[in-house]
Amino acid sequence: MPSFVGIVPVYNHALTVTDVLVGVHAQGLYVIVVDDGSTDSGANIVLEWLNANPASGELIRLGKNQGKAAALLAGFAAADRFGATHALTIDADGQHDCARIATFLQAVPAQGADRTVVLGDRRALPLNYPTARLLGRFLSGLAVRAACGAIVGDAACGMRVYPVAMIRTLRCQSGRYAWEEEAVIRLVWAGAQVQQVEIPVIYRPASIAPSHYQFKRDWTEGTMVLVWGIILRVFSIGRSWARVGSARSDLFWPLGRRNHMANCLMIMMAAYTLAITGFTVGALTAAGASIAMVTSALAVLVWIMFRTNGPLLMVAIGGIAASIAPVTTLICAPLLGALWIVITVNRLRTSR
Image 1 (tube, rainbow, N blue to C red):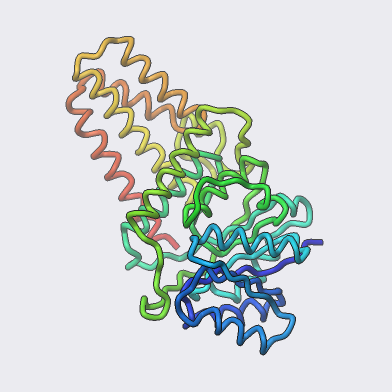
Image 2 (image 1 turned 90 degrees about the horizontal axis):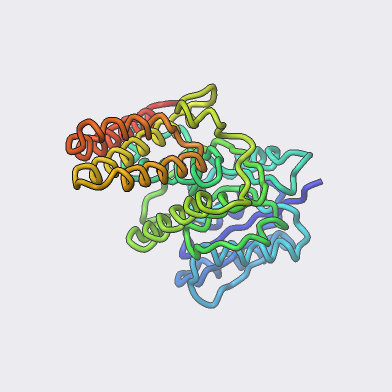
């Protein structure tokens, strides 16, 4: 039977960490708190809570701030020493509903538990959810799907259950927030199955639960990590494809009999494919490139779509349109693709 612990990475969350500890402990989990070099009183507050609740958990202190990935890895090592088979991770800023922990634990199947990861999916999205954040969230989901086939609704959600033995063997490139997105890809490559649990969207004021995400640094790293994951999938072999998710039929038609999220991701994939194909072939044709060069570019695009189960139909439409009206397609295809993606994202915002 699986045995669970909770891991709470903390960095300057003195105002919220106690509520999280209480919530995790109430679900019967031993709590491993990893202080990632906090400069506030958060670590002392954790110590006070642990002293008031003997044998309920432990505190690990990193000497300096090293990023969320380092905190999680230190937590996994402690979970391994504790003898746990699975670790539930939850952020210390109070944005995750501790009452949902039981649902996460129940989502781990009796068969294949040691190769199952359970991901949180923050829903339903409020109408005032920032468009930029929403777009980034689902573009990252699209990248995860292209890299490993898993249909993931919230690739960056920090509330998860990991199989400890499997995650301890994982070697990721990212050292900060992008680690969680990269971990999904590499776990699926290693043969893990993905389960998802919907959780509510909870945001606290920045004065209470400040975000430490730095857009310039962390968005750049996240983009590079996801693109690298797709490149590895496209140009290498031996990387498993998710058993539940996209199918070979996606190569010919972007819609299938599946949930709303999966269909929206495939619509976005179709829009992206049309934009890239139309722009690439249109640019080469308008510049007077040889037929061999245009054909080679199309061949590369076909191979990328084949390896990522992308809609070849969009490659054909983009290529034909660009051969007939290269300049128009060069300009219009990316605009049409962007509009298509924005409309799809807004459909996700309003869906319940």
